[in-house]
Length: 98
Image (tube, rainbow, N blue to C red; front, side, top):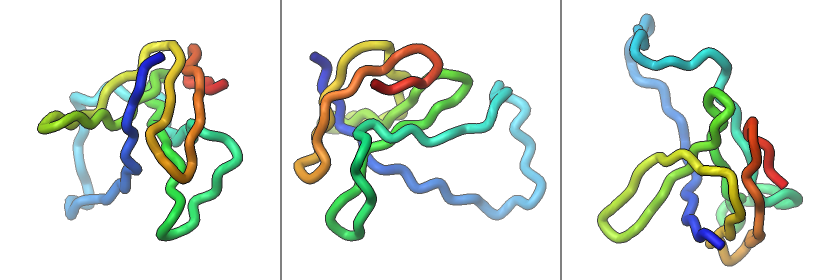
Protein backbone atom coordinates (compact mmCIF):
# COMPACT_ATOMS: atom_id res chain seq x y z
CA UNK A 1 0.00 0.00 0.00
CA UNK A 2 1.42 3.39 -0.99
CA UNK A 3 0.65 6.44 1.13
CA UNK A 4 0.30 9.82 -0.48
CA UNK A 5 -0.43 13.21 1.02
CA UNK A 6 -2.44 15.14 -1.50
CA UNK A 7 -2.81 18.85 -1.00
CA UNK A 8 -5.72 20.68 -2.64
CA UNK A 9 -4.57 22.77 -5.58
CA UNK A 10 -5.90 26.20 -6.51
CA UNK A 11 -5.15 27.20 -10.08
CA UNK A 12 -4.64 30.93 -10.52
CA UNK A 13 -4.06 32.69 -13.81
CA UNK A 14 -1.17 35.13 -14.12
CA UNK A 15 -1.25 38.53 -15.81
CA UNK A 16 -0.32 37.73 -19.42
CA UNK A 17 -3.46 37.87 -21.60
CA UNK A 18 -1.73 36.07 -24.48
CA UNK A 19 0.51 33.41 -22.93
CA UNK A 20 2.47 31.00 -25.11
CA UNK A 21 2.97 27.49 -23.79
CA UNK A 22 4.75 25.88 -26.70
CA UNK A 23 6.78 23.54 -24.48
CA UNK A 24 3.79 21.97 -22.73
CA UNK A 25 2.58 18.93 -24.70
CA UNK A 26 -1.04 18.89 -23.54
CA UNK A 27 -3.36 17.56 -26.21
CA UNK A 28 -6.44 17.19 -23.99
CA UNK A 29 -7.98 19.46 -21.38
CA UNK A 30 -6.83 19.09 -17.80
CA UNK A 31 -9.55 17.57 -15.61
CA UNK A 32 -9.88 17.22 -11.86
CA UNK A 33 -10.17 13.67 -10.47
CA UNK A 34 -11.56 13.21 -6.95
CA UNK A 35 -9.95 10.26 -5.17
CA UNK A 36 -12.57 9.62 -2.47
CA UNK A 37 -16.09 9.41 -3.87
CA UNK A 38 -18.99 10.65 -1.77
CA UNK A 39 -17.24 13.59 -0.05
CA UNK A 40 -18.29 17.14 -0.78
CA UNK A 41 -16.10 20.14 -0.02
CA UNK A 42 -17.38 22.00 3.02
CA UNK A 43 -15.30 25.03 3.95
CA UNK A 44 -13.38 25.09 6.25
CA UNK A 45 -13.58 21.49 7.43
CA UNK A 46 -13.67 19.07 4.46
CA UNK A 47 -11.47 19.23 1.38
CA UNK A 48 -11.63 15.95 -0.56
CA UNK A 49 -8.30 15.07 -2.12
CA UNK A 50 -8.02 15.45 -5.87
CA UNK A 51 -5.56 14.90 -8.68
CA UNK A 52 -5.10 16.40 -12.12
CA UNK A 53 -5.65 14.25 -15.20
CA UNK A 54 -3.23 15.44 -17.89
CA UNK A 55 -2.87 13.39 -21.08
CA UNK A 56 -4.48 10.37 -19.37
CA UNK A 57 -2.01 10.41 -16.45
CA UNK A 58 -3.04 11.38 -12.91
CA UNK A 59 -0.79 13.87 -11.14
CA UNK A 60 -0.98 14.77 -7.45
CA UNK A 61 0.98 16.91 -5.02
CA UNK A 62 3.50 14.83 -3.09
CA UNK A 63 4.70 16.21 0.24
CA UNK A 64 7.49 14.95 2.47
CA UNK A 65 9.63 16.97 4.85
CA UNK A 66 11.37 19.64 2.72
CA UNK A 67 10.26 17.91 -0.47
CA UNK A 68 7.14 18.96 -2.41
CA UNK A 69 6.28 18.33 -6.03
CA UNK A 70 3.66 17.42 -8.60
CA UNK A 71 4.15 13.72 -9.37
CA UNK A 72 2.58 11.20 -11.73
CA UNK A 73 0.75 8.42 -9.90
CA UNK A 74 1.52 4.98 -11.29
CA UNK A 75 -1.33 2.47 -11.34
CA UNK A 76 -1.78 0.94 -7.91
CA UNK A 77 -3.46 1.18 -4.51
CA UNK A 78 -3.29 4.31 -2.35
CA UNK A 79 -4.58 5.61 0.98
CA UNK A 80 -5.45 9.26 1.56
CA UNK A 81 -4.08 11.09 4.57
CA UNK A 82 -7.06 13.29 5.40
CA UNK A 83 -8.68 12.72 8.79
CA UNK A 84 -12.09 14.07 7.72
CA UNK A 85 -12.37 12.46 4.25
CA UNK A 86 -10.28 9.27 4.31
CA UNK A 87 -10.41 6.39 1.86
CA UNK A 88 -8.47 3.78 -0.07
CA UNK A 89 -8.50 4.06 -3.84
CA UNK A 90 -6.94 2.45 -6.89
CA UNK A 91 -5.44 4.37 -9.80
CA UNK A 92 -6.05 2.65 -13.13
CA UNK A 93 -5.33 3.41 -16.81
CA UNK A 94 -6.72 6.59 -18.40
CA UNK A 95 -7.26 8.46 -15.10
CA UNK A 96 -9.79 5.98 -13.79
CA UNK A 97 -10.26 5.71 -10.01
CA UNK A 98 -11.81 2.70 -8.31
